[in-house]
Picture 1 (cartoon, helix red, strand yellow):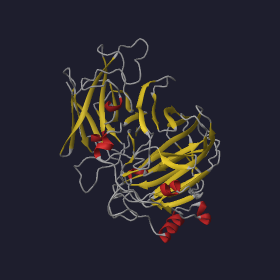
Picture 2: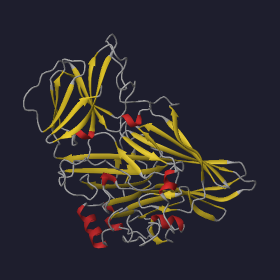
Picture 3: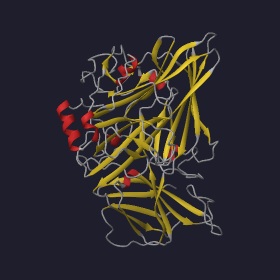
Picture 4: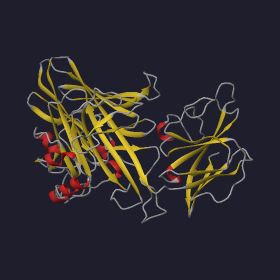
Length: 495
């Protein structure tokens, strides 16, 4: 959302460099214009909208009561490298969305009306007339897959909309179709997907005619916030992966260094973000969503920072143009689903699937993990940048497990005392590890992660999401967090 899209010549050059099969049918965005927002939401208005996180073992997404999101991040390694311009500074997040996941409805000749009142970054107030009935909540796991499901609810004078959220495990991934933009035809997602179901109920005493729902997805995979995203529409059904019936896909991808401005880090992230439907939309489109500061191309100098042209305008103008590919832009895609007339008190629903994939290549961020002192009740662990030089004292065997900094935030009831029975987002680096040294050849940094030293003990009955082997004693868990010092990430146990 930072940089204006590349000119047409540059887009065509990028298309040629990537040897894209769709170049002969190359389609530029036909974005329409729409009225700028009069204002942005105040901070008080934004703070009044509850936000909740739902997560799986690989990624996390925040949602509001309308199902809107402006934040989805990868929570497992590899993570983006530090900015070489600030080597000791904080490592960046691994953002995948960094834009709008938003829906709108049309009925009785009114609308489209956005479900979300306050768009973020760029901030602008929409035409929404919906109020919050129930905030997002994820209380339990009715299907027993280890991932909590939940819902939220909003309504206006005519419609009650319940948004249901269901993280599902897809062991073989799902096919993220992108035939129009890449010779690979499709990408296989990571093994978790999010299903979002909109249940719409007529609250009035008269039929609602011509009901339709729009879904917009504006993406910035690879932690980029520049106009380097390719996006395509693909209706093909691929004989690969799970949930194959969700064949109508809009998928975007980018290659990026892991920094928002694309500054070279020695690593490249090849990331994909997409959404899919199991029914053919009545219309679809691809376009832009550019800028975030006053005066940026496409943004007004004052008032709400709503881009004055783009895919969101195509929704508001009911002008989805059916583009099949768009290259090197701040890209967005949308679908429209016509749900027909809705009788008084009647309910209809629509289910969509959100998926991601990330792959990293480049120079490994090698680190040495060492147990410095394992003789007392609280072992000390140190992470040094670079390979291990010499062995350190310690007693084994033990397992070393790495997870993201978000682990404790997404485990209800988990506190610094580490008195929890379940962890999420863990990546096991060594099983039955018997040495005091362990080289981490992950494209990430020690300070991006939480580390766990696991030994056999009688203190706890479980560790992580697993149980001890039959006949084996329970596992004791020590929890460490990183603190940065010149050349070393030192991790000390929390008492």
